[in-house]
Image 1: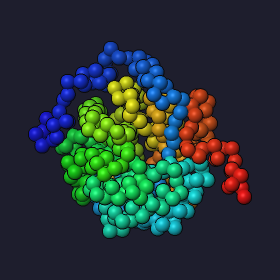
Image 2: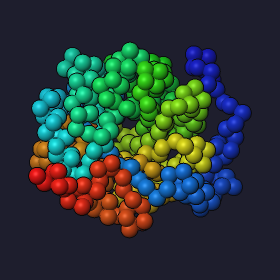
Image 3: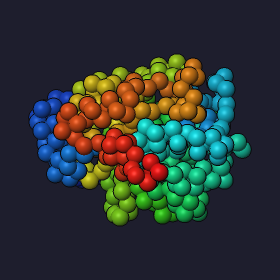
Image 4: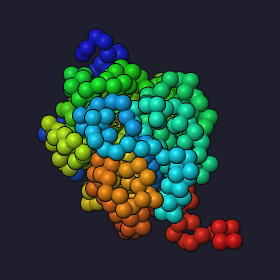
Length: 355
Ligand code: SF4
């Protein structure tokens, strides 16, 4: 282990069974893992799936991540949404039944800086029931301000815990700082943000090693900030502008094994699957371990009100079903989709909304 890494990323005495569950040739067959994971999911989360949608505020970025369509060397036209445009996007999302929004930006730039993000959070919080943020790393004081503006959670992917790969892939910009990023969930929780979401971009480095490091990171956060909510996403790299080809292929089989192993090892952590994944895989994982999914997603800036744009956004999505079609598929599996105002969307407007 690199001496510069924090002590909690060193191997722990309690990780042998997690490590074993991850190994494809272990005594834990996929069927055994699935059955155990399903039972734990049902006990802890019931037959529900919380749903959210991402809203890209800006694609300005100062970093040069090799795998991203928004990297600063791409010729992608740059824009940010102004507050009136954000309100318009939120209104379009609400018409789809969405009231839980994840706001995204690239690395900090003059065009999309902390003040812009804080103002955008306040705009979204006035309209949406839950507002979370996936943006640049901030200080504890900034996270405190963001929480006051209405942000309840952050997502920050380490992308990979392999420091050599990390250095290669993050070619320039603030995101080059591995340790600054590693410490970000702690700063957010320290600043009063209630939930922190972690993840790696699967395909960039050895997936089993990255899964192990994620496990250590989540265990550390769970012990240090025991009141906080933790979540974990499983993004597999998707085709994007720049056409980066990842060195590792993550099969459905391996991804399923990882999801089940995390559910069994960390039963309280929310496990998230986005529209990067195929409809068949998402439907298969619902009820078996995943408890939160994105829905009807657009990865372009302004993508909800401008559905005609040919812009590819940050990456190509795979599951492009409508909110209605996706919820129907969940219900067919006896799983209740949960947006806090979901019934409004599918039972028609309330009398207050009609008047
Ligand atoms: S991954 Fe994020 S920080 Fe990296 S280039 Fe893309 S938007 Fe910028």
